[in-house]
Length: 289
Image 1 (cartoon, one colour):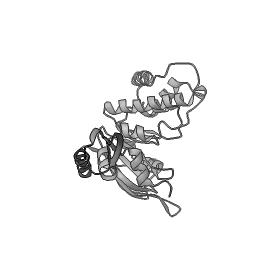
Image 2: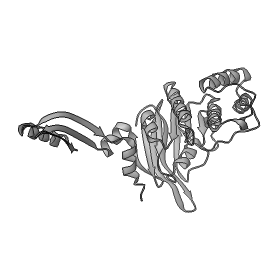
Image 3: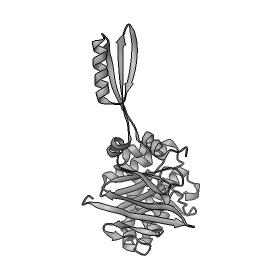
């Protein structure tokens, strides 16, 4: 395991009514990395995020953050975490700045420092200062306020459950871009998501869950090498007609090219198509089960 591991889940199990919602999963995240957790509904993603955040205790196993065991009572660990649940209701009668100041007070942040952080967050998240109460905000604006709340204590680690869920494409794109910005600033991030193109684009590692178990875990290149496929498409002219031949093995492709040329054909194009994360996910999870 790498020396700069920040989060390490070790044999996490969570049992409800004699059923394992999470069944012995293990993974790690290094400093400054983004881990994406994906899986069908009921796979155990939210339960996993709550356990590693210290919101619920595991039935067995443990999570280490910076070498310390996470627990409900370990407040020092919670100070370095910014957690965003999928459903994150706000105090809708409050205004944005007052709301963020309230949470800064919970974290014992001095008012001058809190105001500096809040000013920065409002600017970063494109949240305009207004006298409107949070209950009048759009869903996308409320999500931005919730993200600002998770950052007001300047945490080292961000754990976000479906941060872009249910948002319009423009706002979802903005929030994913903001997560990338947080990564560039050295934050260690875990988030769950359903948009696999976004996950593939931003994540260093991916954990695929199914039925509370790990279906696959690794970097994007590792997952593609282990579970993906590569298709070589040869476009060629033969006998006055254009034809396309699809082959999934490089040696076979080379032999096919030689045979086409030996038979008087002319190669006009050779393209390579590899599995993306969505194809790998569907193959591993088999959502029709």
